[in-house]
Structure formats: structure tokens, C-alpha cells
Image (cartoon, rainbow, N blue to C red; front, side, top):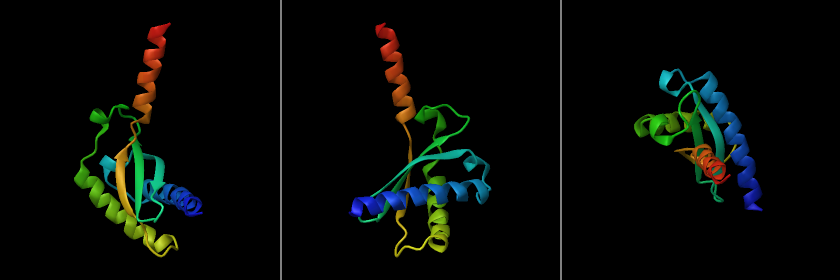
Amino acid sequence: MSSNRSEKIADLLKREVSLILSKEVKDPRLQNINITAVKVTDDIGIAYLYYTVIGKSIKKSDSKIESSILLKLSGMIRSKLSKIIEIRRVPKIIFKFDESIEYSENIEKLLNNLK
């Protein structure tokens, strides 16, 4: 049952964080961040936000944003979320680069090489 709740909160966080990033973040380094997935722990203590950078390479090494910038961003987002959504405790936000696109591209290349 708590899994269902964490999924609903993950969906809500994805929607609200995407809106905050598009409307309220003025830093040009963060303008092209796209939230691809959100995973929330069952106790709603931590939310992992998986992101990609639009218009950049899909490789983590080419698209990496400094962790200090993401740490400041997570604090600002958490503060704004506490005013927007009505839950007892807003989860701690941890940004992680979404490597699934790069991974799927590598699998596709391997499969094409087998033909």
C-alpha cells in the first residue's frame, strides 16, 4: 500500500519539479534539464530525480552538471515544493543523471552488429 502512495508522490513530484524548472529557474546552466523519472523511497524520505540535458550529448560525461549546482537546486526546489504540495514532509531531493538512454543506444548498436 505504501508503494502506491510513493508512486503517486513520485508522479506529483515529477510534474511539479518540471514546472518549477521551466518557469522559475533562471540559471542558464539549468534551463535545459528534463526530468525523465522520479523514484521515491517507501518512507517518502528521499526522492531520486533522474534527468537528462536537452540538446546535449546523451553521454553522462558530456552532459554532467556540477554537483554543487544540483545541490543548491535541490534545496530551492524542496523549499518551493513545501509551499505547493500538501504532504507532511517533503522528501530530500537527489539528482541522478539518467543513463538509460545511453544504455539503450549501446544495446541497439550491439544488436545491429550481430546482424
